[in-house]
Image 1 (cartoon, rainbow, N blue to C red):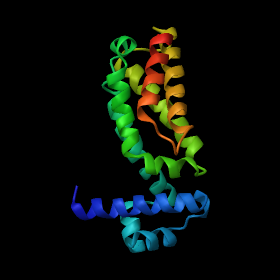
Image 2: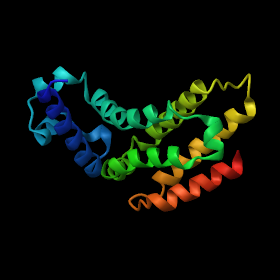
Image 3: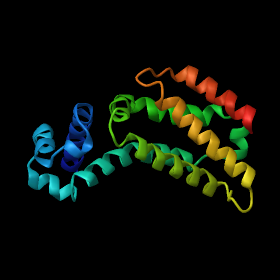
Length: 177
């Protein structure tokens, strides 16, 4: 990707974060976002269809890192040794803690977290050939664990104690699987 595009998207991403803390998403305007990101409206529309597309793109940036890690999860291995997988997921969260703290207070957090949970469950199950039809129990366990893990990370923010979260999630996984 061209470095100008990266720089523009990063500026927009940062502006979105700042504005999410200040107001609800339906109150953010393209003009205001452009001013905060120090870009022209025409530049904004080269990258995004509208403000909703921009917000979705910003969340997708965070979600993609977590989804990519989930694609490498070996469910059978994770049941006995979850720490490496959990720590890699928490590393991704740690890189984005500032964004997540701001995102948590936005009005799109709830729906976006729901989509993240669904995508993670789908990714883990798909990559381990688990379906409702062939393994209802494991599908339910994965759904339960993903939901609990995400809530355990997002709930306490702005406090993020990676070691404590890792230990509690690993204990839960070993207990529930």
